[in-house]
Length: 135
Image 1 (cartoon, rainbow, N blue to C red):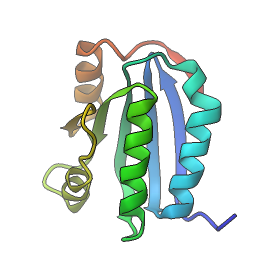
Image 2 (spheres, one colour; image 1 turned 60 degrees about the horizontal axis):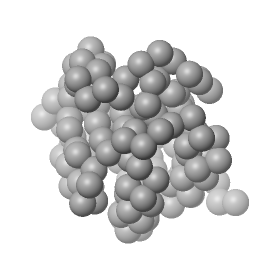
Image 3 (cartoon, rainbow, N blue to C red; image 1 turned 135 degrees about the vertical axis):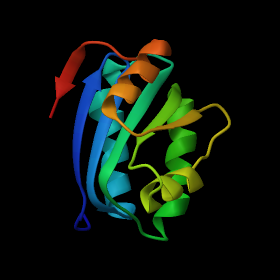
Image 4 (spheres, one colour; image 1 turned 90 degrees about the vertical axis):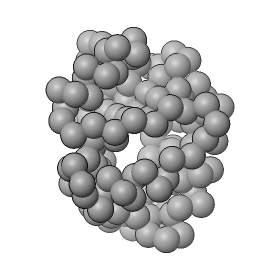
């Protein structure tokens, strides 16, 4: 496998995957993440699940990763993902990059600037709950 440059911390809260990304993401990181979600986390989720991507320490993505992100989004929709919430610094390049990646026909995309705001939004959608797993 290709060397990965980003680190991921993944937790399951209710019907939400909290994914903290530290570092840059490329194709190797996205392949690894999809495999982890499919084998380890998807069995813990029911349809209409969410991803909360904590992008505060994310160092953006490589150009070749953009197509793979589109493929991941289509796959996630087919697996029942309904919400994509991004936690990023306000008025940042990270926020603009995340907004550029809004893809999918079913997934609702939303952006927040604090964890408290994220939990409130996810709770209002019925997908935030008790912690089920942490790595």
